Image (cartoon, rainbow, N blue to C red; front, side):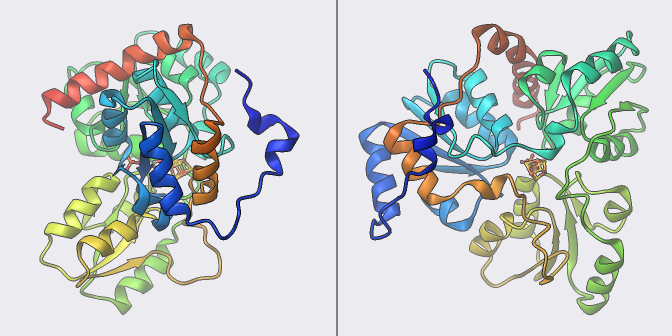
Amino acid sequence: MKNILLDKGWLNLRVDPSLDLIKEINYLKKKKNAVLLAHYYQNADIQDVADYIGDSLGLAQEAQKSTSDIILFAGVHFMAETAKILNPTKKVLIPDLKAGCSLADSCPPDKFSEFKANHPDHIVITYINCTADIKALSDIICTSSNAVQIVESLPKDQKIIFAPDKNLGAYINKKTGRNMVLWDGACMVHEIFSLEKLIKLKAQNPKAKIIAHPECEAAILDHADFIGSTTALLNYSKKSADKEFIVLTETGILHQMQKSSPDKTFIPAPPNNNCACNDCPYMKLNTLEKIYIALLHEQPELLMSDEMIEKAKKPILKMLDLSAKFGL
Ligand code: 13P
Ligand code: SF4
């Protein structure tokens, strides 16, 4: 079926401003047996109406076991694609097809095929933040929750290509003592943090613990008290006896942190400046209005060929099997 998002008329769709969108979305979810999955980087209002909020691994696991007829994915394109690959008989909707990812864009399949051909005796471990074409060229997928364990599960002398995030790759190399060959990609949001500002911020808030996502650059990670995926950062902030945290990842996660620990202070880095550079411009394309329209019209739908689904599924299933073994 054609995606009506591409039709001119669709672009002009307006939502009646007097509608109670939360009520309408909840009504449509029930009526259509739809589940709304949301990443932690979504706006607070979307997180509050979601059925499940999680990091990339949690969302993939949730999509795989979903029994709903429709999976509405409030995240970015590669996440919805993963949901479709893992549960292809479901209708997967994405509120805005333009919600891409700078990291996924930094790894075009033709260039990556050449890179792979230049390292013939290497296993390819790929971060889930990539297109289905790249997944199809990979041996094992990983997320920031399981990347270290997946690499460590391979023999010490196994040669590995890691793509597309050079920062996550460098972090894993440091942590595991490996020497993986890294693809030169990065996330525009996690590369934006300024070390100078972070040091100043820490001096102004000496009791604050610095917590960072491994997509940040090494110079930033060197100053972190804790490094982990969005779920790991959230769990750390919940369990910690500390009361203040400087958070180096996309700002959406602060909503759950603040909700889980209302007595604690979470400071986004860099703080209160005029640019919202630590907001992911792709994640933030999704709105309640677009979610409502997507549920109402069951469009735009994420469509993939059966062939691509089959090719990209293998390395994702390997990751999920390994994650289950690790108890993740
Ligand atoms: P996680 O969801 O694994 O924490 O990764 C964050 C991210 O950048 C998603 O795009
Ligand atoms: Fe991609 Fe970075 Fe946005 Fe995550 S935060 S979706 S890696 S651009």
